[in-house]
Length: 154
Image (tube, rainbow, N blue to C red; front, side, top):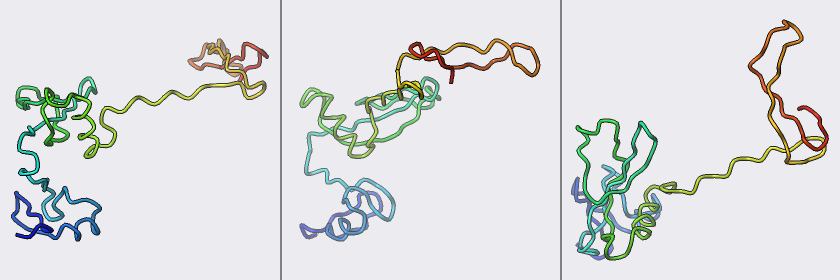
């Protein structure tokens, strides 16, 4: 097989590397069966890593050994990929390689939007409960924001 051809280890089909780059933008995934087409010969010292999500706690874990999914029923395998061992390059390099497959893996949480007063644009805002409804006279479950600088409710 030529140097410009890659072969899928799962279904056995072979493709021109330039064809795959033009069609799907990468040469890592077989367009026929979706299997990973990374050559094992390129990195013989790499091991298989597993990226899991715990459905109960919504936590993600990265492991170098597979988890028994029959025993841990609330755990789901997200991605299986090849990367160097942690002792060789560190966990940050493994996470960087994982992000080529799953871009938002171990991403930093986004900052919550800041609330500001629409009148004076102060960020000193307090949330207070509405005590009574004018229509019914009963207590409500609603809340209002009160600006501590200009004392307006919004």
